[in-house]
Image (tube, rainbow, N blue to C red; front, top):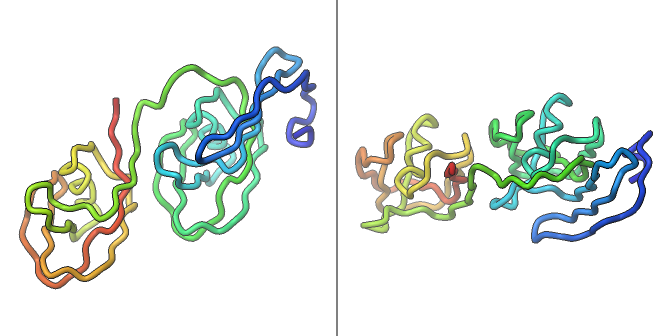
Amino acid sequence: MMKLLTGIFLLGSISSYATAEMKISESFLSSGEISALIIEPRYPGTGLPIRFDDWIKEDGVCKLLGYERAVPRSSIFSGWDQRVIMLDRNGNIEKLRNDTDSVTQIACINRLNNTSPEEKKVVNNPVHPDSLIPLRFDDWYKEDGVCKLLGYESAVPRSSIFGGYEERVIMLNRNGNIEKLRNDTDSVTEIVCVKHF
């Protein structure tokens, strides 16, 4: 931890805990601030790993997890994940990226007492609530329709995975309305949906 916080004197550990998704150790700094070393950070509610694609966006990881900012360039990347959520500098989702490494360790400063203004949920094998027929869309701009039908506001862009082979599938538009029925095709087997508060 000292290597990550070069030039910052640690006064002592105040807490160390783990969530179902990650491990967090917090310490007081000589400046009066609180630092946190977060191992295996995950996007809350999804269990998906996270990443950013430019150092100016590093603060976004900490903001997402309820901290003020990141210790500059404290992130360590490793692994190779099938699906990774890409963040902007404010902790908002930019897109979902496939087959890349992710942040496996980051140091954050000052835990905030606010909660995330949005909820994300991984929905497996979504079906129409009335007919229980699997769902599909035929163009990425219609992806939000699956989540809207299920009571969410939008989908994480390109988070859908298709699979299976269904006798009948309901094709949706971007508002979640039925466009048509299609026979003998695949359906959405997983999607990440978003609800704002």
